[in-house]
Image (cartoon, rainbow, N blue to C red; front, side, top):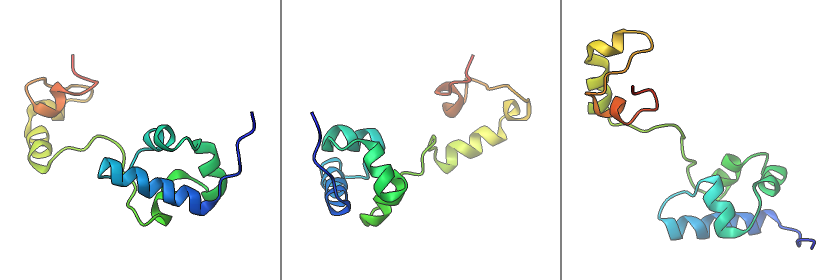
Length: 101
């Protein structure tokens, strides 16, 4: 079954609708599941999902793991932060890390 053509204004509207529902900027996968618009269509129209989000007047998710300043300072002050490849599980960031033992 062939999908109908999707325009830039339709994508922008769908991003804004998803953002209203989530109360934040949707991730690419959230947008795709909520709107039914495949990310490759967004890629072709805008050059990337982040560009489409900006054109919709929203700020794209910076990506990565977000940690607060206090948690970061705790990790940086830890003796484990000075050892390459080590992560102490006593810090909140390391305990949730993929690198924790």
